[in-house]
Image (cartoon, rainbow, N blue to C red; front, top):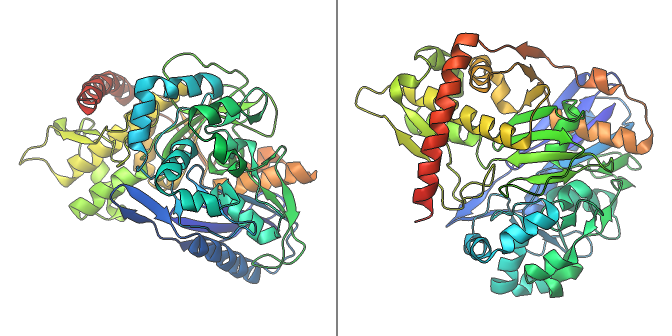
Length: 475
């Protein structure tokens, strides 16, 4: 069997596949996020223990030898480790907002735009540049004690394999220090962010992705393991999005739009990032918005609605939700794509005493759909569109999303990130797997022409409301 490991923000998963890409089994375990005053942290020991736990359960459940394993996980944030890959302090999550004042300063003085013009990465508070600069200013002892500032999957890889030093790959390194043309760190960016004396902390880049053998924790000793790419490009691989112009929408905790490209355009409004891949010259133009299903989860929790009720409620109110509108920017650190606005917050309008729970749920799903359309347009979508993530479990939401986007959706279910990690590992090790078979969609959802026309007008209205909200956020 082939094993894919996906170390997510709130859930760690391990999935087993046969040689034809059929998903044999999945094991998962939740991990905690600590949220306080805009700080969002994770316990690295808990995350690593969860990886070992799900791998042990998976390999015990599926009695087949492991041919190879691929590792992926959440991107961004800062995971400070010592020489053995053990934590120096709690990990700073990509959702963390503590560095927003630094980002405000860089937005005002032009540093933010200069970095984007050099690397194609639009920094946000939870990206490594701002977080490392914040730590250098307010918690320098942690940086002094660390050997390397890595990303989530890199910590796990070093611990599983016993590698001499933690390394990363070009996908995780893409934000914000990697020059996408040379595929090496841009030292001028390091200097601009005031981190020259911390340059030693940037991990070596495995290009192509690093490989190693498991030491026997979770995976059988000697199992071949590869490190990367991180979860967004891994999902693109797992959904078969590799041809220029084709796109992927991940409807998960984070709403992420990705479009494959061979171009590099560093003009226009700084937003999103270019994710380098293992194929030089091939990139993903990424617009990862801060909030996807997390916005709906908040509304469900607030209204006392369960996930099982969502489909029926979406059918209980018409397009437009009786005038209720939602700007779904719920993240405490604002928004990062397809624009950067650290102080933007969610807004609900058109609500009255006659508003029902169904109206609130539908308006939220429509708002997320409009945000997705905005991201996909900014990313340059011209080809087919695949969709994956937890949101695909709702057929009614997928129909609504097809209508809002005005295009067919190739729905890819299952553990898409883990699947992509396996395909990346197979490519790295020279193992022949049929990627076309592995990435076949489970369904095609076509838009309804009449509703799509309605939502095209609604999208223009959404952009107008958003522009007004961005103006208020800057006051």
